View 1: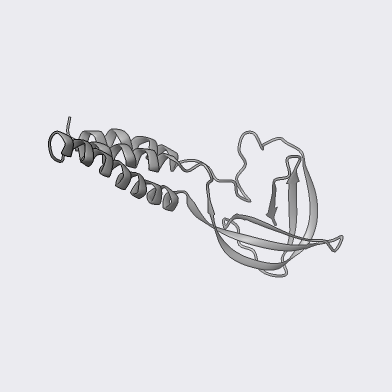
View 2: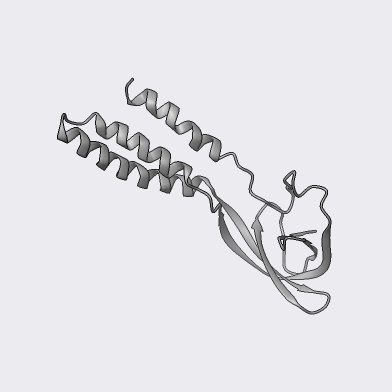
Amino acid sequence: MKLGCYTGILLLPLALGACSITPSSTTYTTTQAGTMQEVKFGTVIGLRNVMIREDNAETGKVAGGVIGGVAGNDIGEGKGQVIGSVAGAVIGGTVGMALDRSIQSKQGVEITVRLEDNRTVAIAQLADERFIIGDQVKVLTSQDGKARITH
């Protein structure tokens, strides 16, 4: 089995990891659906573009390391093969980690809201709903402290 076969097999977890759902103002997970949330009303007073990156992005690093190790194994013979495997694993892991970060980073927005009780809060979420300063919005907060802003 050559590198091409290994690559296809080992990239599968990376492809599957890229399909995870990131919370947003318009998407609920099955765990979130049907749970009671506290609702507060307020006005958008600030907006800032941010990137949202998933915390558990390890798939690319592992897959890249294995693929790099297999590729490096094909270089040289004897001790050179071992050195090639180690070097390939390190390089592959670094490349895989960078790829994973780019796949699992999404455009977000930090929304600052002045609530009706004059408190000010800021929440970062996916930029899947358009907000402008002055919008009247709802701040939905679940019992675990997670919040989202919607119209």
